[in-house]
Image (cartoon, rainbow, N blue to C red; front, side, top):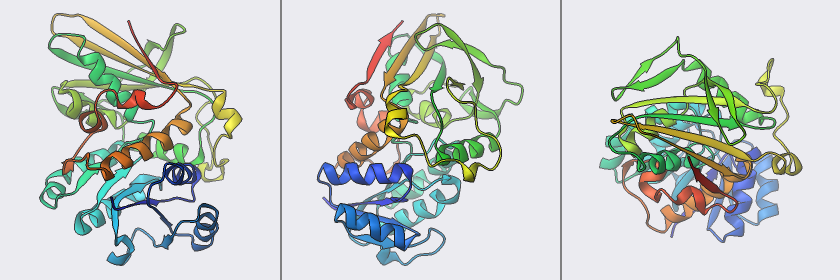
Length: 325
């Protein structure tokens, strides 16, 4: 096994991912732009660190690395350069983004990555691991599935990084997959979904599942929605938000999502996944995905969590349950 490099390791989720990787015994290198913060974290974890920006950095920054896990958002600013660097140096790329444009980029680069023997696997955190696996699970419950609706419930306060990423998602515009193609849907309307406590209004939003769901299930019609169950989406200068919820706040809010699949005969299957808080789930899932990739669970090209790691991967995180309706 080669080493895992976590880029953005001094950020809110990056620190949790680095601590998790160290705890499970992975050969870990941490990286980012801030040498002072990296040196401090590296000393705490007793791991090596490398300082580089994503716009330009020498190839030796990625020497002896088998997997790069990108935790530095907004990913619109980091993913393209890191994906290209991974393709050039033969390193598998993983990240934890929900930003749809990053998935579209990975999809476009899939053939180039495959030719280089490199895998691009975005979305190994709360989005899209649970929803991708849940979509496949629900799709298996109907014959000839034709449409997929996925709804996320966001409970509690958002981290600064998540808010900045959601701003990128909003900036991408409202999209849906119609007959296999991603198309603008500026007039998309809210819908009600039941996460287990009765129907609640959910707003349309273009998460990465519009890409992963298509590749994982083959369902040609996909829409995405979100329900903010806790604090509303923050306003003002998002860069001034608190870094993220503390452990007590995370433990107070579990994460839930719904996948609703309709078959050609009109049969509807609805499945709900409930798990630990998304900010707790993400570093655990991301590090486990990286561990499996380092162990040889990989296919060059663009991949999705459910296709690569299996429909049951989402439930390997303790405290996760799936309920069918």
